[in-house]
Length: 126
Image 1 (cartoon, rainbow, N blue to C red):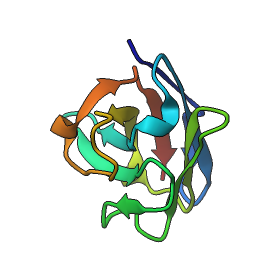
Image 2: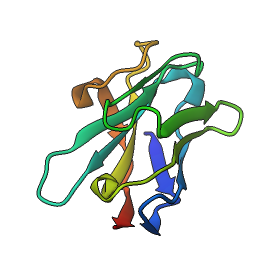
Image 3: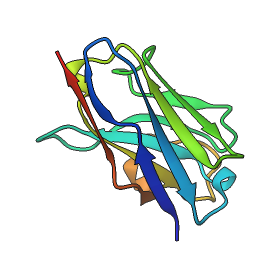
Image 4: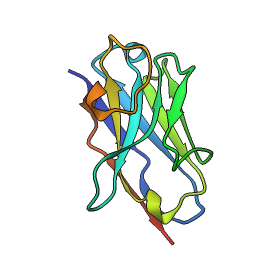
């Protein structure tokens, strides 16, 4: 059983920064690619960013490229999402997810992830 716990969300103004964290336990952290997804009110959950097992390769949604940075620390069993230049449209619940360990690479597809955290709320006021 894998547990994923997100933290770092909050209420900020447009242009501010936040750093989200995802603490993982229950499975060897370095054996899983990881991802961040978000869900805005009234919308479907969408891909934000993903990172492979080693952290050497990343993938971003076009809407966050150049503003968000995903990273991981395989010693601390933690993944991060540094969010800069936040916009009102970045508002939503942010979820971290762990990909099935047979896959080395990252993925933008929700169905490729088998464990999810409970989410952390990010609200950006304009």
